[in-house]
Image: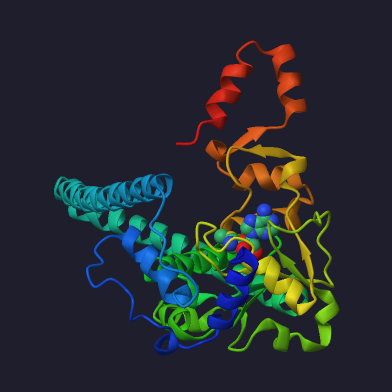
Length: 348
Ligand SMILES: C[S@@+](CC[C@H](N)C(=O)[O-])C[C@H]1O[C@@H](n2cnc3c(N)ncnc32)[C@H](O)[C@@H]1O
């Protein structure tokens, strides 16, 4: 019988194969939509096992919704860029007008004041940059190790890889702003993900560690300290242990590859744990979070030692409902709370 487990086993075997070895022969030549691309991508990695399955109506709806969302986002971004340009022009005109109404002496004084303010802002920015460098360097020496496992690129469509690269950039930026940053590692750093990251301005100066090989080799001597974070684990994370090395799966898959990180960790004989989301929140959907959300939660927890605060800080309100206990408390004191809760549970 064809089971999820043997699908994962077979696909795991393909994860490490270079692109040209993945059979693409059966891919439909008329691929036009992202939905088709998903089918094609899955068939590309599993076509020797089963015929490509068309996306369910629900999945198609979700995909369409996502595409509309992306299109709106791009439109909004373009409009914002335009507005910023307009604002810049307006400010420049105002400034020139202001100067033209002043005497020569006042003009020089005004220009000098503005220069001074700019200098101050630059100094402040430099100070912030230095402090960030210092904190990240400290974290690299003695901070909590968090590994992004980048060995799944063969399982992602190009847009998903692109999205993962953006998430990694976001993780680095949040880490730099954190009160207690972590020691970030990229392992399995190779191929398309590597070349996209290399193109990012400033990437070569990132204060992180990276290894082209798998984490299991990188941390060979500390295997007992490796903990794969995965929503499919039965173990609930209670604390973060500085001696442990927490691994996050570098995957953007809308959980298409359900259970793949759990399977990998079990095969390798390393520990697993899930975030204790269920103890503090009810989610309106699945508890599988994105890479950057998981990192942000860990960082907030390093700072606050408070899971609830960390989850509430990161998980968008539309994705969470409060726990029943909290709801009951609120219902006692607030007639509108039920309505409020409903509002929170609606997926937008
Ligand atoms: C988008 S998820 C990938 C889901 C993928 N299908 C899998 O099997 O892991 C990205 C990564 O974030 C981490 N993650 C997401 N939700 C989590 C949770 N509730 N608890 C622990 N780790 C989680 C896992 O390391 C996961 O691999």
